[in-house]
Length: 135
View 1: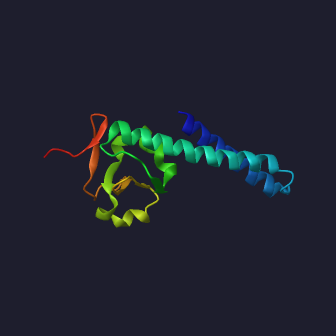
View 2: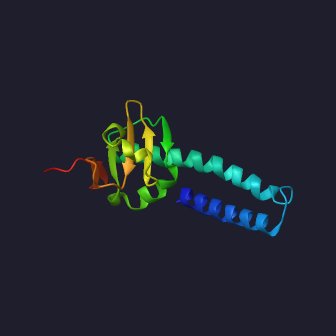
View 3: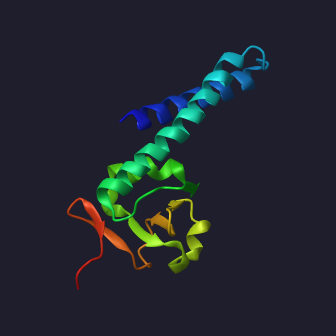
């Protein structure tokens, strides 16, 4: 997945940037790495929105992503292991704003969250779609 490759490259570049700073290189000397990191940040944000839009369009009943509020870095794990995540409305689980393992986003009508927290009632990943479990 392209998005995952971009995130991996971003992590590698930030690692090298930190190591160069620890070794005493100045900003001018690592400006090339800084430029790549800034460019990757923009691409990661754009591609993250695209991946989330595809998930919404193909695997949920929600459409028209407006914005991501928090947790875009969790999109890779959501696509790899969707069965570990639940899709809930934010008003049902306000504590997720503090949870680092959540992805909060807005659609045209409501604000939703992908969360790993099992105490919330939400849609589970069943038959390649997020849907309500039948009781």
